[in-house]
Image (cartoon, rainbow, N blue to C red; front, side, top):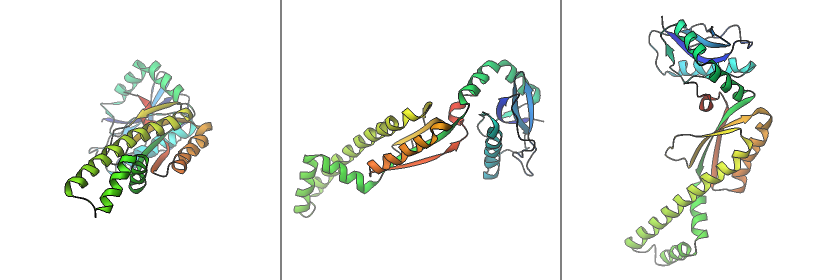
Length: 239
């Protein structure tokens, strides 16, 4: 039977005795050892799909195992042919995995997504540009202006907002980076001007979160959403 893999830990780590993994009913989680490492595994379900139940089960195993020490989390859906193959991989990549575990010791991932409050950013970009402000006032005085004037004004505003998004993305990164041990840029998405994952030492967690709050307090146009602490998926590099 195929083996489903949740994550990798040091062999000496005191892991929970009972963990329930993916599947319906949930399959029991066990460990497979290879050298100085263990993999948290279960039998793979006959049909593995990214259902909410199984996604949460995978996440729960990684979080509970990480309560006693660092865990290299695998993304959902990691299936190996069998336990022997898992052992072989652990032995072959032992040094790399041990290095990554050492780097993750005492740290958690926080994901930060930033976007703009539309009304606030429009107010800021128009107010900061004398020409845009003059055009805005002229169009209002003319009852909104002609179609061409409205179009030209809208294009200039759009360019100004895009420039402000780039500036604020750099601001978010520059403000939060000093409080993190590492940073990863996430995929770009509609509606976000920044999607960043930070690896934060637990003793710096409150400083990091205070810096996130400070961003919004100092810049009302910014909406900053922080999620965490999370397993360090973005920093595992577990291949």
